[in-house]
Length: 149
Image 1 (spheres, one colour):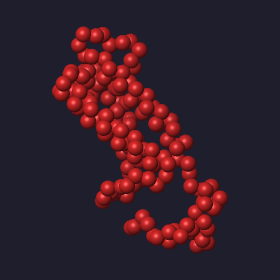
Image 2: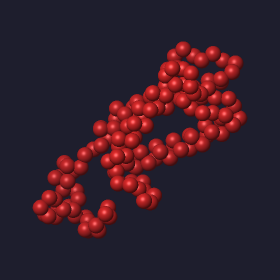
Image 3: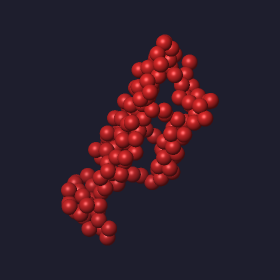
Image 4: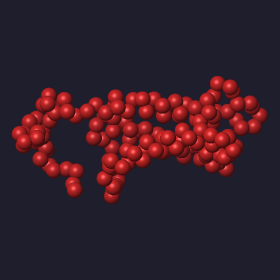
């Protein structure tokens, strides 16, 4: 199934029943959700996790005690994030090609955030090759949740 119809290229869209209205019609604005609000709590939690990871990376593994104010980031938390991603992924059609950023302000922001995360991932890998990084620990504190060199 194609996700485009070209029927809206002139600036109009169809309502249920087929009536054509401008894409800036108030009715369209009312039913297109501002999904930023739906994601705010989850994104704030992930942002907090990113700060925790940053604090962990800023603390050398050897020669310095871990500051008490750095919270733990457990394997369980990582699994919770992955479970949420899996639930959302079940709602999507299978991807068969690359997706261009855009669609809405929040979608574009999430594409940008993904790019920043991928860059950070590459930088952490490079850091792990030149310095020892404290691995994340499983909730039972025996098994590393993040493999590092």
